[in-house]
Length: 65
Image (cartoon, rainbow, N blue to C red):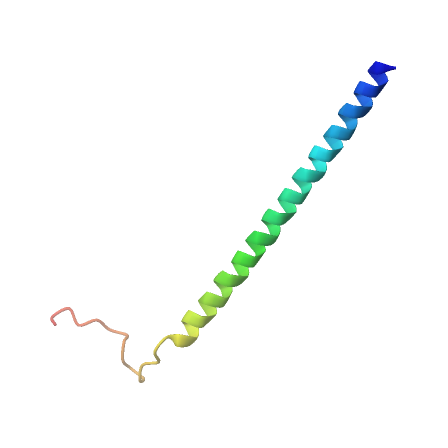
């Protein structure tokens, strides 16, 4: 009977470890998703804050200056 109990205990331990790993992976996935969202918000903010130059300015660089 001790072999059966040892096997059952091993199975329960493996299932607990598997559940813990699955939770850890899900937490990492959600964290990465949140960071992507933050990066997107920062990118949008940066794009909106860029100065708008008058027509014809900012297209050529004067290397003599």
